[in-house]
Image (cartoon, rainbow, N blue to C red; front, side, top):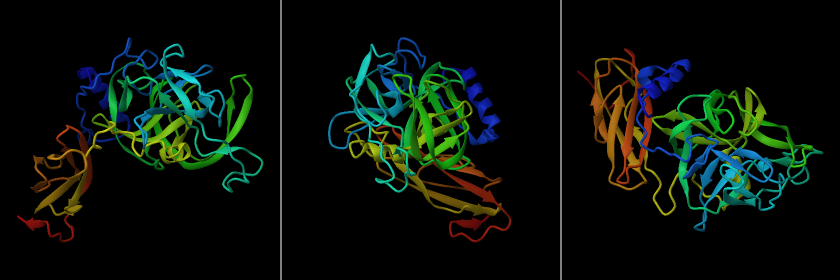
Length: 373
């Protein structure tokens, strides 16, 4: 956030989602990412997810920067239909923001398959499990684990980025966000987590063709032509997001996206297991609240304990929500129900946050971590 007005905008969007204001923390994000403009359609360096890219024939959106499991090369993903041919790699040059400013070369676009190859593919059609192609970077001026984050919905202007802290799976009814070069930041609820059906595309000769996509997710966020390849994430919390998919299109208010597991499986082992670590560095830490009750009596003093792993020890812990404190253990008497949150920070200043909803009830069952006061 750059200023108080930006925070007010975010809190207004939170209110629309019927999320209690005391369950949200909005923090200043020092990771300002600027190019010649701070527009998703402008020159953005270092390159991050959500910005405009262009192949010889299409203008689309960059999805995620990804690593390689066995080499020093780095890549990003966008849609297959943003390349010369869906299901075949022609080594397209891809630029940011236009094809004249090359940043990479297409290296992988998995083959289409039919019913004879896979029973999940209906008879008489060509199928894929994702709309994803892999582009190898020809520049080192990119930022891993980051998605451009506009200051308001529907705008293309951004001054900060959201940090991808983990990978996730689409969940029915959850809210997801999409960042794309045409409609900017939009959001909506997931309506389907395994939809299979034909999707129509225009090729470089403006001829229509269809590919049946297997077990895709759909959500009610706005999108438009050029948003293809956009990162789909959830939820936005204190500058952090979870990567859940790669947007490929849809109607203006109902969109489709390929879940992360699908496109990474199709692209193969060369795509690393993580979207969010810097090459040659440890992954961010992971924290869990591994001891403590979920239901407490209003007269009980209870304790909760958190444990961290990964990242770069040593760790520091900060508790917030219904209780506050520092250290791996926090204790107190709760006057009302709500989220108990713990954030761990490692020696490299990477963080992770865990949430646990605590219910205050007169009929709370016994718990060894609690004592009547």
